[in-house]
Length: 336
Ligand code: PLP
Ligand code: COI
Image (cartoon, rainbow, N blue to C red; front, side, top):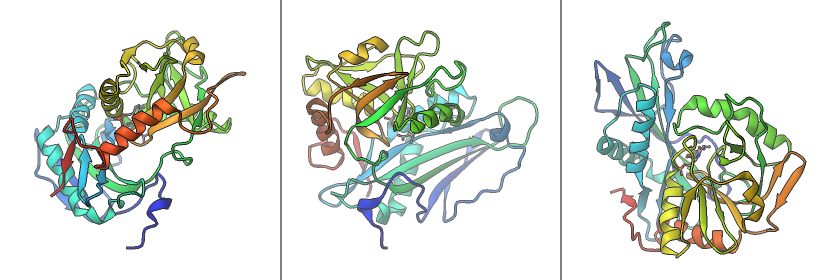
């Protein structure tokens, strides 16, 4: 295999296999590895009209001593079930989910980027309703497919600061981040704001609370976090944001580092007062934000490199994931 590991971005990359489970007559089957990416499904499938489609995102890492370790797959399993429940989809047992992730990662071990390249094996489970129907009702059959692929940085400048744009009030009903459900349709509704941000040269859109537009919700790809001038970790508390596993982990690390982390509503007019701002998530890891554009105004954090507090968090997180720092919270599952 001849992969230029250092040059990987966040792109679809075909690998050896994906694992698939089928749900019918009220139960999931035992699953099977497939060596292709095609499915045969009715064009009348529920997911095509009524959007019973959810997904997850996780990562596996190659450690310094050559092992492959998956970061908190049980958390992905739990959140998959929480999304499933909201969209009237069947739950998938968390233990079975973790085993399935281990199986598909193991089968594609050669695609886990080597230690030190900054890459990871991205894990993308998708679940969707497949029964043909025209009336609005839950599907009777479902597929759960877990794909994996090697990835590098989500935003091209690595951990250098990116620009963000506050999403315009395009349509209060639509692009408001992704709610707390990792549903495919929520992301489709955020695409227009992401596109507007890109057209202004910003990497990412920052969504406000849709009702009052006075509080910061989250980025289109990730949670919002900030560090105050006196070193406190602050992250948004809102019912419409995705409960990020990365953020939950960073909150624990911030606690360990004495940064007194707090989840609280963050007012938009506080943005200018923070020392450092960043986006966090599986794909974006911890990406510092250099400037935030809001209509004609711009908040500039004056950083050309990741700031000192975000760097501490980034080093701690990536240190644990790659095995340089002991896994003191038992977050990693070894693939054997
Ligand atoms: N918020 C949104 C909208 C996301 O798409 C993601 C990515 O999954 C996150 C937050 C971060 O969640 P996690 O850290 O679990 O990847
Ligand atoms: C992830 O971070 O895993 C996500 O699903 C976010 C997506 C924008 C790539």
